[in-house]
Length: 269
Ligand code: ADP
Image (tube, rainbow, N blue to C red):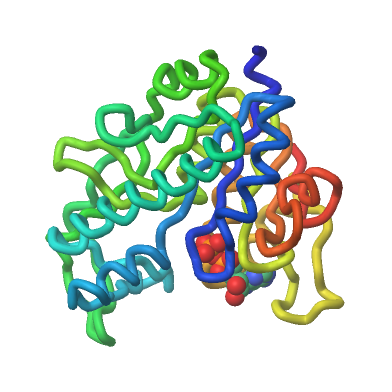
């Protein structure tokens, strides 16, 4: 196995992306090249919070970024949901005859640092939040990922980072970017609930098939809401050696092969 052949795929965790349907596509790819799958968990956490009667709250940073308020109680549910999504996805691949290893528990490859004081708008008022267990990614233990890949398994990575403060909620798009860069992967595919990047979302005629390196700043301006982190992830991956990032639709038939075949928004180094 050469590390350049590695493909990293991020599968969104929102409603609308069917992990079971993606698994058949991933299984076909895993037959041909080393594959790392990073998954989101948002819908699963929301469902678990509803089931346990824990309110879902969002923090909005002064710059307008929105993120899940992950206090200690929510963190525990976040970890539980991430492990369960990870098990399900690994199970789908195994059921298709593909060796897959969920990198959870002691095998979590992402390392992070908790943001101990966040200035944020909570329910419309600016506050300093000190009990949030979200974090920034500070490193990747590549050996944990490579061990799975050299055994011929698909590595399935949850959006969790190990830190001095325990497990942290980290952004999946940026987690995928960090993993792709640390592994020296050639391609990073981000599957989402849209076709890709638009200049003026959702105006179909403004779809962007390709973003060159000198257009990254404009792309960051075009992207709003949840698309912003995907473009940041794309930019981080490219700056750190990944050759190509594709943001594409996760809702279509064979989404990863469609993305690699030219559907979606391609970011080139
Ligand atoms: P995730 O995969 O993380 O669950 P989504 O697929 O929902 O996230 O993220 C993409 C979302 O970003 C779209 O649903 C859309 O509402 C929003 N968005 C904002 N600006 C843009 C843009 N310029 N191009 C595409 N999507 C955009």
